[in-house]
Length: 116
Image (cartoon, rainbow, N blue to C red; front, top):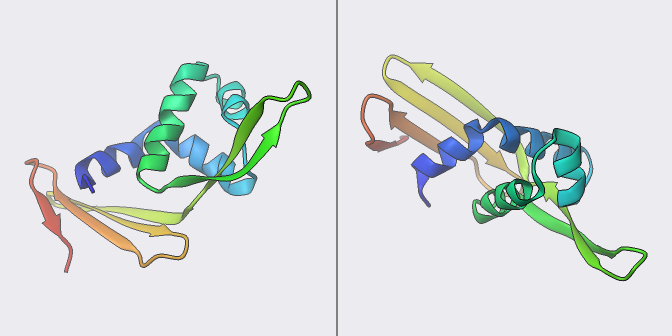
């Protein structure tokens, strides 16, 4: 997993809104796009990005009245903590049914550090 990319995904304003809203109830991409005034193509891209990191998943598939399928997504993030000390950024990520993952980065370089 690209831990640098994951930190950037977690710091994105729209991604945070999508994760928070879909933690309350499963949502379709159209609902997400409408709720947060995101262009539909961008909302699909954000969902795909979140899915690729296991932060969101499809909870259900439904049919529209005219027979088209759509997916409902649910956040898998229980919580995450971000801390900063001197030159190190630390994120402790809790995803449902998994051990917490700790990502620690020296923000003065692109070097990733493993947390103890």
